[in-house]
View 1 (cartoon, rainbow, N blue to C red):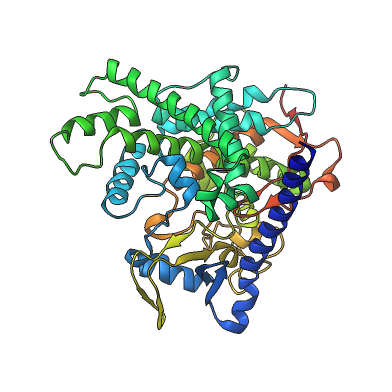
View 2 (cartoon, one colour; view 1 turned 180 degrees about the horizontal axis):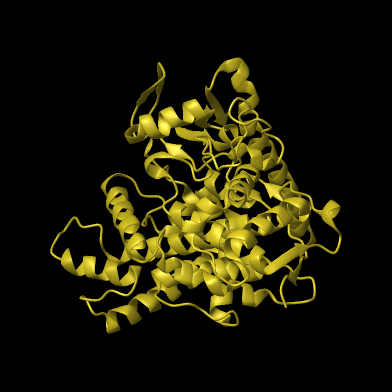
Length: 461
């Protein structure tokens, strides 16, 4: 027993070092590109990967040659978690149909529209607590309930044990996916199936989530009114019924379950982490927090809830929120693409079955696109007159046909949550601004922000 524990302890250390080395190896491509150019081949063990560096290169691939770069590789962890179905890992006609349907349906149920604002307004009342607290739990619940409204047609109580278990599974799954053990599974999936380890618990937990989704789907079937769909599941069930005689349809229960899981996972973790990081930034820079509050007070006053159309009247606030996302650099290597066939790009041939990494880190920190790329600077998004200005190199959600399907929802949530919170509270930390470290807690395929106790002090009596 002791020898087994020692073995796994040593393996954890070795794997963590290998993952850190691998991530640094890829990120260093940003530096190497000055010598070798913006399109480079690197090898991750036996696997060939092409790294795309800089805004011009990434845009040319993902936008100008979008059809060539829509592939998503068969990542073993995701393939097993999704049983080979769903939006995230699909390609070809399955991907096209599921993406088109998902974008249209989510927009119909509020993504990027005024209806979403009402679901986000109630956040502030949950924060009234005179004691320092960790906002991670609260933000995960609040953000997750937004996607739950659109997908399941209901919100969950913050003390719902089943809901809390799903949130914990979500956090554990995403953490495992970017951990050394998760990457080992991707490299040696056949071997890992025979070994004990965290992956077995993660997959067992994912099956619990799958069971929850199946229960919700069955409840929707029993109460479905085809003429009045309530949410994403109802719309998908209607489409299944419409195409029941089509032998090649992609609208069936397997794709429904996996796509719902995709939406729940993606719609919870990344946005809540971004908002949590935003609070840390504002505690780190209290003068910026104060300037945002002054602007919000001038436009909204004390009581009127924010709306999306207020964004154009809050240029400084909008600039800060954009800079937070740029500086956070949440997915530095971008989601991996895949060459489904030979690709001709910039005079090179990228062979079929090559992993393609659009290095978003190199776009968000590119020196000729940002005045001070390594410093937090809201002026990156303001012109000389203090008006908001766009920057085409702002690509935290990637670009092209495989850009994040929930981008407009995430942008809305970040804006409405943060404006509502700053309208009501001033945020601080028991250790003061100097105690806040904006470097990620750990960085691999995602930059995960550090966790801090914060205090939310009501601004108005």
